[in-house]
Image (tube, rainbow, N blue to C red):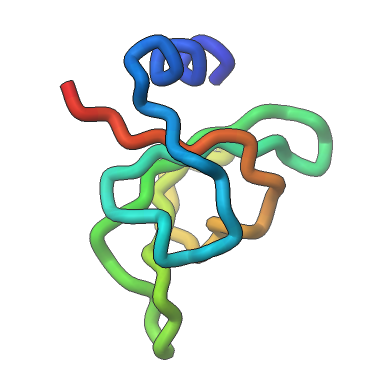
Length: 85
């Protein structure tokens, strides 16, 4: 994960980390630090959370294969990136 974060920073893909769910758009990449201190990364999907929330599901792999979860603010966000090659 640290190598990916460095890649996005070098390609001017960093976006401000905010607590506004509307700032996180499909295709954005988000990095977190988990409660155990490990780093983690996920991609904002194009499917909105059901029930009226104004945010999207996150696609990530946290050890048991890829999952689709509502976990954007579950951990401390350490990076927000929008990569456009």
